[in-house]
Image (cartoon, rainbow, N blue to C red):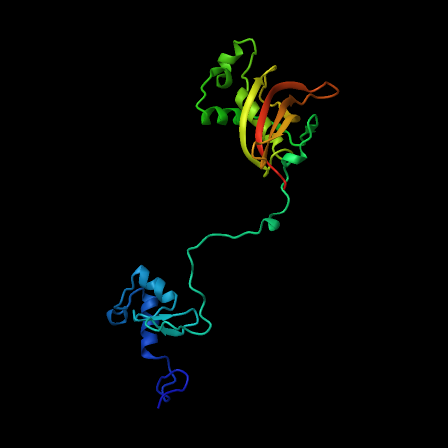
Length: 251
């Protein structure tokens, strides 16, 4: 007769000899050869065991341990749907919501948009931009070289200043409402920009017209970048250019 819970002989209430041997071996740091497991599982077998997968390749087990025959194509009633590789998302345009930028009809010739965002240009900004564009002009990078010029210190790359002005102007003009930038014209850099200067931007709508098919619109803006001055000093114009875009129509 065996004990109903342990499975050991009912008359034996002491520690089973196998467990006692393991305990003694653990205390001495040595295990009897007969107690060392003979089967070594590979990494993949351990992973499969942890997932409760059966060793029989003709059957599959779900997360609850229920076994399903591989040849059974019906599957359990609550089996999850087969995964799909189709990543197409059908989205209703009405669910997207309004875009922050302006559609063609919302641009008014002569209006000036003062953009709220500003940015203080750091030495790292200038260095990274020069590195990314492979511009090794020492006037932008070499402090000793720039100290001997009329400027007395390194200048911020003018193309970075221009690009920054475009970026600052996007939220209130063409964010989400543009088809493409068509051109940048009449670029001017009237004043230099130095590390630590804070830049803001303004955009003035110069012209707008519909495309020949009437489905889109062409808008031309004058973008101006200013260095923010302290106190009551008027901000200094450091870059200006014309930006022409192909804009979406609202309807």
